Image 1 (cartoon, helix red, strand yellow):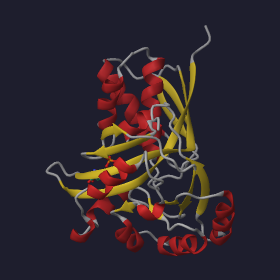
Image 2 (cartoon, rainbow, N blue to C red; image 1 turned 180 degrees about the vertical axis):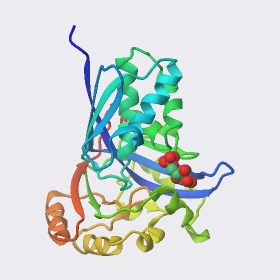
Image 3 (cartoon, rainbow, N blue to C red; image 1 turned 90 degrees about the horizontal axis):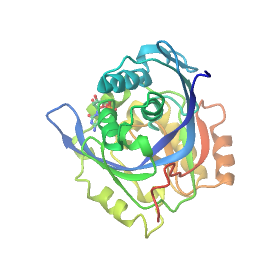
Image 4 (cartoon, rainbow, N blue to C red; image 1 turned 45 degrees about the horizontal axis):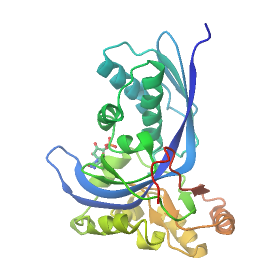
Amino acid sequence: MASERLELKAYAKVNLALEVIGRRDDGYHNVATVLQTVDLADTVVIEEADELSVECDGAGLSGKGNLAWKAAEALAERAGIVPRARIRIDKRIPVASGLGGGSADAAATLVGLNRLWGLELSEAELEEVAAGLGSDVPFLLTGGTALGTGRGDEIVRLPRLSAAELLLAVPGDSIDAKTPTMYQALRAEDFSDGSRTRGIASDLGQRALTSGGCCNAFERAAREIFPGLADVWDKVAGVTRHPPRLSGAGPAMFVMPSSESEHIRVSESLQGSGAAAYLVRAISPSGRNEA
Ligand code: C5P
């Protein structure tokens, strides 16, 4: 019998809005965020095998350290079985950039293994396993457009985003332990009450959103902490109609709406800087975000 093979797309996310509201007793922070998947994607291939393995083409991303490995173990534990599968990840999403690549791979792994192992876990059950892996993983199980609250893992679906094309600019360097470091670097003035994000969320179906009208609590800290970010930021801002906005805890930034001609100008202005530019489209892979 031929062994089963599943191929899944793991889409990157952008945080159109991200406010940090306050510290919690469990070491996390309460946030309010509007999340959007875009069509920059890793490919996750899952096959039957006698034991668990994770191969990834990025340096140091294979094996047990990959969040996809932890996803396989967590799902198997939930189902009371031994995790057996060969998982191959073809990376396109820049690593540790604020675009949710590792979380997207983990989400695709959960969806794929739920099928490969015939577990038939419901969406709600998968979301529970996903939340144990990381704050962004529940949203990335289905993607689209959503408001995230709590740690970012409590998801409410929103109407589809009207902007067709977004430009992503990703500085070449990230930092170790990026997300906790960035949360720790926040100062009192970076916190806010989430009302701006809720306003953006409730306007989504009616008004065209631009990156200038978006917000991100990590921008001040990101300009100080990420090597080269301020330079990339200024280069992008110099050639785009709308200002860039940070995604997640950075260092990736997005410009919305954008166009092929802006993509060419940004790519030219970033030449030699180690940064990369991508022109992407907002995508609702599950088709659940109708206008
Ligand atoms: O949820 P995730 O594993 O991506 O979070 C990584 C780290 O980022 C957490 O251990 C925590 O230090 C920080 N974090 C936070 N508040 C959030 C999300 C993440 O403080 N809402």
